Length: 427
Image (tube, rainbow, N blue to C red; front, side, top):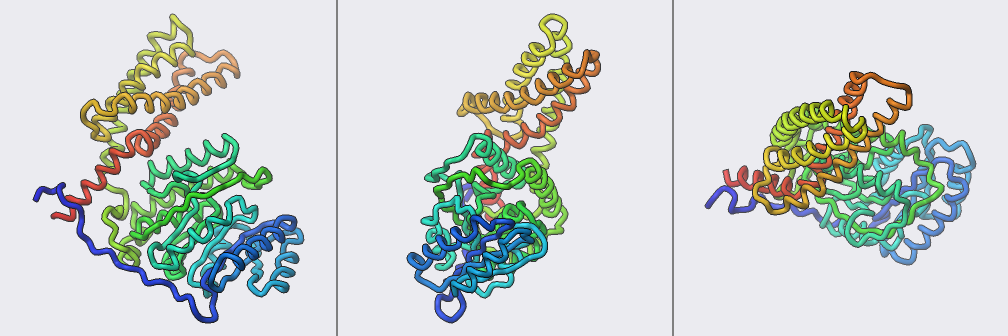
């Protein structure tokens, strides 16, 4: 038997169905809120009516008030007094992650879920979300706006941000779930009790961190394509949230690399024995790819600068920048295809080059934008132009690696992961 001819044969540990009888609820749906005095009551009444009509077991709706300064707490208390299945919890500090961490660990339900107060996700997806957890088939379930079959109505800005964020996650943390931030998730309570003590974020990155730990621990994550309509009155601060998410990605990557996050212990405790569970820490393949990508990037940057300097005097700054980037982008994609990501042969080369040119367009936007800003401030010297372009190219290079790894050559990467896992199992 050759090393790559057999798939791993590790046994999959079954998960028992949850208890559906007794006084405690089977499902506890948490609705985190901050200053939602207007939307809270119709949301809770609609959710309550849906669960009463569609959910066959005992349930609870928990309103988690995150330090609201309006009448949200009064509305929540009134609902809890009127409806036996509703309870109100008050937290004195803001943070969706903090609210979920507190209410989930304090719940006696077998399955824990949450959804945003705007009910952007169609409630018809709630039963498919929690059913695999109740049966024992899955450990965590997420609604996905990016999975096949999802129907989404939202503006191009949020669509681009969402897809870019998930590409970054695939490139940096090698995630396999498609949508980290959809406000529609569920988890088994036994799994939550094991994972939550290791989730540090108290804000919007909470979801991503929890899912990364679940994947690394060998848990099964079930995805449900959802119908989702964007809330035009959303209060999420996009820039601040994006920066916090990037800091969270760096922190989690560092924790995995240093062993600060006890993935090995969590895997031993919870893993189902999935055939291609990621090893803990930063995989050697990623380190090799970074080294090779860096070498190709240095050569490409030197070639780009040489071409730019040669062309600058004859065709102008922007035209020289475009020509130098285009030539080096084609060469860079070809070199990374072969040397960094190990793709051999001509199959898919045209597609890879087309996708590489799309990535090149982003780099062009970044560098050209930097030049435009620089010239808008005055008449810079040739040396200043070069310094600014080097800095802009550094940012474009980081973005390029994430997009090449998480999008352009993703299938080749997945095949490589499976092959390496197979080799280790046969050994």
